[in-house]
Length: 477
Ligand code: BES
Ligand code: ZN
Ligand code: ZN
Image (cartoon, rainbow, N blue to C red; front, top):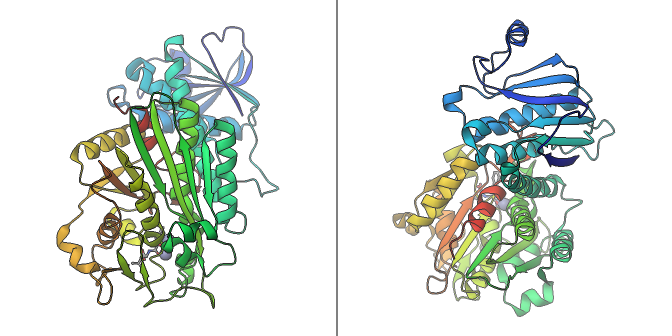
């Protein structure tokens, strides 16, 4: 779908026009209002109705809800409903007006782009029966909103890029393949890209990645992407869990939990998505994308419960469950990231089922000791719709991960507070002397949905690409 922003649409013919209306239909002409009411369309959030038009064969009305309550989320939802309806109607050329800009200004323009682009994505490349493709989408709005619209477009396209990668199954995306994707991205945007194979992993003492990776015939990798602008004032390190498939290893997962574990690379794919957005937006911030990537499989060569591994920073770890593999590979990346001495380090990982139990499928867990960072991330997240909720790094739970035969163990002694004990485990590998600020995002719930929700189709959501990319663009010099 080709997307263009125009400030003039006079005389343009298209198969469909998408237009937003508030609840009560006050802004709609009387005749149309009656016809819409007859279709039981009242302009409520997420409602959609179609009437025949003239210059536009059809007019798709999307509800924005009460004017006094309209927000970016209402706009994203309306835009998504509109573009999906246009697809159902087999429209090829579509025009969409900016939604909610009378109230939300730039935010409305950005959200319109996000809703249209995120809302039209579906993972159907392997299907004979694909959804109808819209050829051209023209978005009509005032010139002053073009920049905000373009920002929304970049963030949404980066999100869809991540979603597509997450949705690809484990037989297609292996750790090596993920590294190839990173290299292509580096080519496109002029990043530096290092990929560590087993030899280099040994050399860099990345024992977690090597250990977890041993059980698969698809060898493990570590990826390091760098975006380094000339006048960068701040340095950010991003870390993403890249388990291309999590069978649980020898502690094999039961059937109902193993299915969808292709999504266990969502953190890594989000990092790649954020790097793509960074490549487009080119902020004055140095950004490093670190991805430890493995396939977690049971095998004669696989690592086992009771194994003890000693990390480069000296911390020794007892393996209690081979299914708590994410924290083992992230540890290497956090040590490596610390050595880069960043102002900010953020890791994102589909880390624990416990976080899904705590927060449900629509909210990610945020762990940080930096109150300022927490406030900023939560405020961006409220606007982006990628919901975050701060969780405590409760020191009283440290006892839970104390090891009997090594410093720590990779699973808590009880299952209670499982998302927190996982975060406390990660903290052991973040060097407080070298990293000014650190946050961990447990995205196990929202990264992948088993059904359509709001503007997301079933499958990967690309969270938290938009939130973290936005944070990077807003970093003060
Ligand atoms: N990849 C899973 C976590 C997960 C669960 C992601 C559900 C997405 C949806 C992770 O590697 C895992 O298996 N964690 C275990 C940890 C346990 C053994 C301490 C879990 O959550 O059960
Ligand atoms: Zn696991
Ligand atoms: Zn996992």
